[in-house]
Length: 619
Image (cartoon, rainbow, N blue to C red; front, top):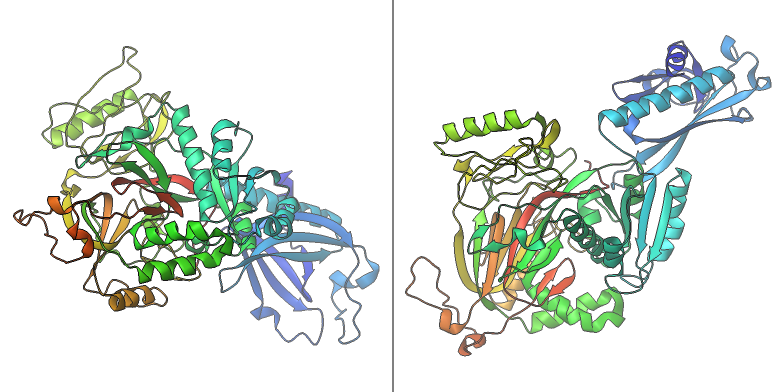
């Protein structure tokens, strides 16, 4: 059928589109509409200037129908001297309908239907099949899988309280239009979605969609990742940072993609992944099957206990105080954040602490490119697949150790234990061991310095990410009185802060921007907050410093621990009332709108640990 359709479509089949006689052609991954002749004398444009190009990946559906010729107009004259249309309206009319995504300057997407009319039913049907075949080829080539069955969580209480209405009127009709089946769950209490994802069978679904704010998506992500680690027998504490080192383990990566329909108080993930918070645009990103990797951080307490995963901002101090205050003002709705912010500003507090961090090989000053589609920074080295056998991996290990004067070989883990791994930097010391299973076919992994050989078995396709040992950086330490300790895993843009906390942060570069705001006057701190409203440099303040890091630790310190004799660390010299106490006052952590009351935490970045239904912001 496809061959016959392609042969028929190569003929000079002509259609009527938008008052022009036109021809269709598919080349270079796009449907080209070239207008040949005017059908109405008063059409202002000339055929030579009218050429429409529709990327195949933006086509949603193709169908045919029977209709009437749309020539019933008395305002202009139909050109009837063309032999193809000499029967004009007396001929039967068949319509080729191509539904595609139309994009606007404000990054909004909408569905537009292109209708091509013809008097030949066979040509209409052949072109319909031909476009469908080419569309499927395009999707297969790009490894794009469009969802057919989705699990949808709706939070009817959070944010503006409009999640049900947004889904019913703006999203559900789009899903129904393209034939996506949905299972809708209305959440009844906090962590309802997380519990559902952890306990119920998800094999039937192609993805999970959260309708609400960032907190709703945070629930789904934590539930899905916790479930994935349990299914693969990976302890959640395996990636904890202890004494400046991280374990050599990695978390398994879920197969399901995640989407967010923005309907909450803050919708950062929508802003940074599509450029706005339009629900219809988010739905169309899901429908076309876009996929973009997303970094996550794992948060652990200082004793190694797992706390949660985070995908956006983790902040201590001022933003933690704002969230803590806003929880007591939930009846005010989204405006509670404004009141809580004013209250926290009036009672502005600095907290003495110590920060250990591992700098990235790309510092903040040199990495000034913004995350825009197609983003090479996010996509490079995320998934470089190679065909490895046990013999090949052992020979590669020998070559690696010989080049680095090592004495033993890396080992690789059985695929039966781990599905897929996130890519993150190993912080352990360089060392090599080898353990071969009795079967001789599978190897158990260990990371080699900054290199990892995950999930390698006979005739399997694996990720092979290697970071030279020379890129390893030493842990650094700083201490002081901090009004805020912010970590921005993405730009964290939203309606109130269009460029975010860190405008050049990327969705999946394996780094987090650590922003330290030291003690300052209220006037200077207010100037710093105002800098987030516009395009100004929010880091151009003497009391603000930023580091692009791969991991960090924070520890609240007391007056008794402040030592001026240690010249390797920055002494705390600012005078604040809390230092008069032996036990200084502490704040809490605000992580994606959730509170972590423990001040001492460890944060480790996991590159591309989940995939979003998103393409990224298009210029």
